[in-house]
Structure formats: structure tokens, C-alpha cells
Length: 354
Image 1 (cartoon, rainbow, N blue to C red):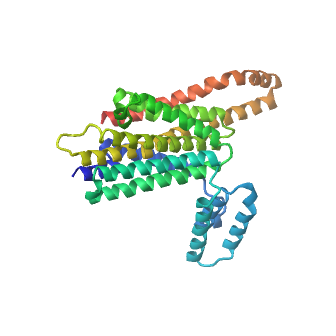
Image 2: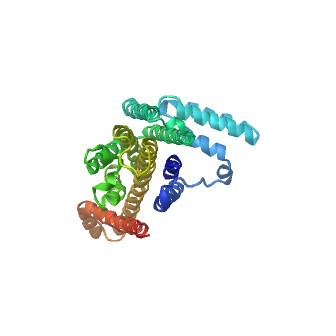
Image 3: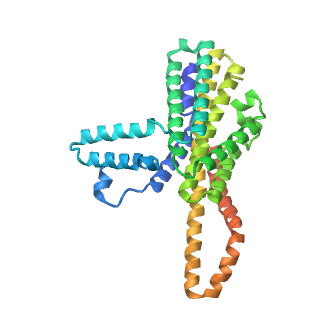
């Protein structure tokens, strides 16, 4: 029974966790669709294999652009829906899974973190006898899928120009903040919310807001800032999951309910840290970071349009606006972040009250 509870916690974790996951996942899907609008031509819009291959070709480095164009040309000559799907999926797998996966150093470090997490997880699986319960094998498969999905996401994001440094710095900030709230103790790493009543909103709302503000301030474009927020969330989630697996093994799963054995407590602890660091943390950072960066870009475009209008009508007024624009940039950015804080905190308090 404890292992079944662990699976449910990984997937939902109670009414509040289910609502939070649905909220973040739904918001992430909407934001993704806004960031990737369908093409204007109806032919391309209805040709999913072509759109999928075009997305994969966009990941190729400059010296392999000709290879990508050759794949698109080959797809145009294939007739039949099943044949086009097979060619498209095979080409996407070749682009995504084959090297180069991005900058060698960061990619190697994150892959090493993922492999180390797998080693610690396997050790705990054997050491605490989790293999005796078949539900724990389902848990293991889910964890492996989440880790592999995070690695693929990191690989895709590291290939994007201008994203690596900003995203990894944001990831280090996020991981350091979570460790700080944990008090650098094993029990605190497993349950970072125990630092105080507002530790949860601070970690899942305040920290992503800082990442979003940093991305909006330092990125060259809104697209780079949004991708940097994703990379920050996924890389920090992988790092914290690795540390949390060590914590689970070190203290035998931590505190547990009366009557729950060591194996059940460890299984539940593994599911909790996976849900927290491989789902909640990346989703919160991506969603809130997207909102902050996008809001800043929209406000900036409105300001630019207003300045262009002023320059066409009254040159003297345009000069005064240009002089004061730089000094007001940080203030406007903080104001937008404050608005986002109020909205997100209101949503969080609503779910907490329920």
C-alpha cells in the first residue's frame, strides 16, 4: 500500500498537487502554443511531419544546414502519410540523439549528474529491497523517463544561440537557493518547505520570478530569455534531483507515517523528490519565467512604438523620451515583475486556502 501511494504521489500527490500540476502544465502548453504559432500557409499547417522536421532542422548547427535542407527536400518527394511519418520521425531522432548535443562541457556535466542520479537510485532500489514490490518497478520506469526527458530537453536548449550561459547561470541560482532553504541538511533537501510557511511560494514563485527578470534584462530577445528560463529550470531540477536521491538514501527516506516500513518510506521519498524536482521546479520556472520575459517584451514594443510615433510628430519630445528611457528601464521591469507576483501569489493563496 505505501508503494501504491508513492506512485499516486508521483503522478498527483493529493488534490493540491493535482491542481498545481494541471495549472502549470496547462499554462505551459498555452505559452508554448503562443511562442510557436502555426504557419500561415494551410498546406504547412496541416502537414505535421513537415512541421516536425522543420523544427528539428532548426536545431542543426550552421555547418549542417545543407543536410537539413536535403532532408526537407527528400520529405517532399515521399508520398503516403505513413511513409512521411516514418521518414520525419527517423530524421528527428537523428538530429536530436546524435552528436553534437550542444556545448561539450555543460552537456557532459549534466549527463554526468543524470548518470550519478541513476547510480544512487539503483543503489537505493537494491539496498532497501524495493524490487520486491512490482509497483516500485513502475516507479523506476517513470523516474527513468523523467530523467531522460530532462536530458533531451537540455540537449535541445543548449543548441540554441545565446541560451547556454544565461540559462546555466539561472540554473545555478535556482539550485543554490533551494539548497539554502534546505539548510544544507538531508532532511531539508527532501522537504525544503519545512523552512517556513512561505518557503513554498518563495521557491516556486519568487525564484522563477528572479530568473525571468534576469532573462528579460540580459537576453538579446524575448525568445532567448524564454529558452534560458527553461534551461534554468531543467538543469536546476536535474542537479537537485541528484542531491535529493543521495539525501533519501542517506537518511532511509526521512520521517514517515506510523506503520510505514523503510522500503515504503524510501519509495515514497523517491516519488516526492521526483515530483518536486523533475516536474514542479522546471514547470514553475518555465511558466513564470515565460510570463515575465514576454510581458517585458510586450511593454518594450509598446514603448518603442510610442517613441517612434513621438519622433514623427514632435522631435523635441522624442529627444526627451530617449534621454529618460534608459533610467526608467529597471523601474519598469520591477513594476512588471511586481504585477506578476501579485497575480501568481493570488492564485497560489487560492489553492492553499482550498
